[in-house]
Each structure stands twice: as structure tokens, then as C-alpha cells.
Image 1 (cartoon, helix red, strand yellow):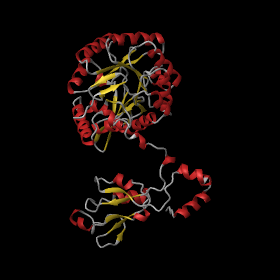
Image 2 (tube, rainbow, N blue to C red):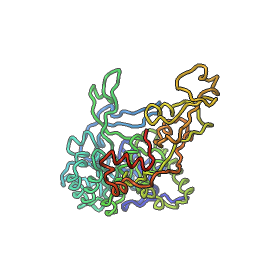
Image 3 (tube, helix red, strand yellow):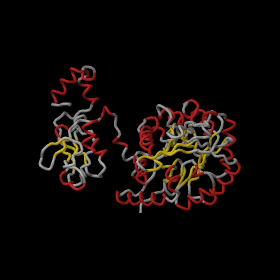
Image 4 (spheres, one colour):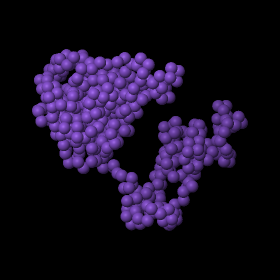
Length: 459
């Protein structure tokens, strides 16, 4: 059985699945139950300045009947008294010495405020501190959270105040609400951070109720922006993780990165690990399905690692990073075409509609007799009773540019595959081509001449 244990910035845990700082880690009783289900660690819901929360804190995004693809929250940090949180943190660490117990903190941007809370956190016996520089609403208006994370100078200064006084590992949680995530990362590293984590929630307004005309969630007839999280943000989180772990400054520092953002299953977690995360944090999935989802995560990741021959997490961490390139480094000569499996095709014609209306018009509808037909409802050839006579979509491969839109809209798994085919074009990257023939990047005449040389026709 694969070894799932982690050693992250000096923090040890039996597995890489940690609950993120959020409502699932709001109390000792909750974290005790979570650890009973197998979570390897927990980042305590952010403690710090006194706050008052409001009612109607969440709004959910549902698409096609699937609930909670994303969640928007306007909840602040812990509204439980500081002494209660600190007492329960100490108790949990005493009961669960093998689990990672990390305390998220947020206070005013002053060395005195940080010193006071850091000393109290150290006294609990916690394994580490996570600096919450990401909370995008409520606290940021008070000069905390994202107000610190969005200003690299403040990020560095606040981090330095903490790292200069504590013996504990310090993780800086970055906000995604910036243009360049690496600027914040460099600032945190310059401030002495021992590790980074990302992403925190994204600024969002979830929706407007078309019956009441109220922004959701409606708080007494008013609405505001909130923090966006859940499965819908996973691609954004993976991109920012990749930006960090391909950045020379971050790599040179050697600080590990804890990934989070939309992790629902062991498969999601494996993707973060393959892109270099040393551990992962989970929130929305636990809020949706409860703590026991970690049991499936542990079993799934362990079984997959066994199948792949990975004995321990370091064997797979960052294995996908070498594939990361810029557009200018990609092979312009690579070619793929769409191929439709006629045995799996249900003749819904979504691929035809998508290709014909919004892509490159390279799919035909062909009647059983081999005649190309036009789309549209025809009672003679459509309908359940005459399914065998419906036209079938067929790709004209010489015209297919390999955009893959058809494969993405097809409702049947495995029905349309993108297949690599021999290319007659030169295998060269944009960077190589424009270094050799720079006029191609500035002159359409030069571009057209190159296309003619290569036999490239674009319709």
C-alpha cells in the first residue's frame, strides 16, 4: 500500500488531505470528528480580531441540476472568542499528536498585534501558522486579509513581523485577486515564509434573483461581493499553482506549496500533487458532502498510486510540471483531428451544431444512404420510432483544425476522440519560427507566404 504521509515545511501528517481554514474547522468538536474520519490535518478557521457575522452568508451556483458547483460566502473569520479557540486548539493537538494542526490568523497590520497572537498560538502546541492574506470581503475593508495580500510590500512586511518572532513554520496563504500571483509569492518569501498556500477565494457576485430582483445572498435587502470557491475554481487554482512552481524565484527559494481550490475527489488532489503541491486543502467538498469524503480520497489516491507504481508521495509530486510550456514553445506542426465512434453516437447532432455555428464547419450530416443532408427536424427521418434513419455526423478530416469543440460538447463519453495524425507541416515553435523569419509576426503578406509554403489552408 502506498505511503501517503507528508512532511511539509517541517509539519508531519499521515496523509496530504487537510481541511482548509473555513467553517468545517470552526471548533474543536468539528475537527475531532474530522480526524476520526481520517483527515491528515486541519487549518483552524482564522482567528484574530473581533467580528460579527451576518445571516445569509452563502450563495450557491447550480448548473444543469448539479448543485454547488461553486459557493460564494460573505462570512468573516471566527466569531468565537479567542480564548475559546486557543483552548480547543491545544486540546485537539493533545488528542491528535500525529495530525497536522495549523492555525490561520489575521490581525491588524502592526507588529504588536502579530506578536500578541503568535505568542498565544505557540502556547497551544500547534504545528504551524497560516497567515490569511486572502479574505476578500469584510476584513479587507478593515485593512486585513486581501488588503495585505494584494500589496506585495505589505505582504512582505507582515510576514517578516511573524517569521522574526516565531519558532513555528509560517505558511502564507495567497489571494488570487491579483494580476500576478508570483509578485505576492516573492514578497512572502522575502518576508521569510516557510511555505505558501493557494488559492484563497475569488471576488464574486453570485447572481441576481429574477423574482425579487435582489442580489444573492440578500442580507436584509442588500448584497455585496463575496469569496468564490468550489469545483468551478479548480482550473484557476491549478493555473496559479503552476505559475508558482515554474517560477525561478519560487523554485530557488525551495519553499513548498500547499494547493487548494475546488478539490472534490482524490483525482482532483492527484492533479494538484502532480503539478507540485506538497499537500492539499479541502473546504467546499466537505461542506457539501461531510467529513467522510476523505475516506474515498485516501482509498482512491492510495489505489491509484499502487497501480502507477508510486510508493510514496514524493515519487509523483511535480511529475507533470516538465510539460508546462509557453504558447511560443508549442509545436505548430502538431495536428489532431476529431473522430466520431458511430457505435457510440446517439445522433443528437450537438457536435454538428457547435462546429457549424461556432467553429470550422467540418462536420457533415450524412443520411443512411450516404447522402449529405441539411440539419433540422424532419418527421420522416427523426423521432424515436425511426432512430435508424437519422443522419449521422461525419468529420471531414482534411478540413478539421483539431479545435476539439465537438469532443467537448458531445454528451457521450468516448464517442468523439481527438486523434493525432501525421502532419505535412513543419514542426517548429512560434519562438523558433519568428526568430528565423521575424517578418512573419508583423506582416500578413509574410504570414500568407509562409502558409502557402507549408500548404496551410484556413477556411
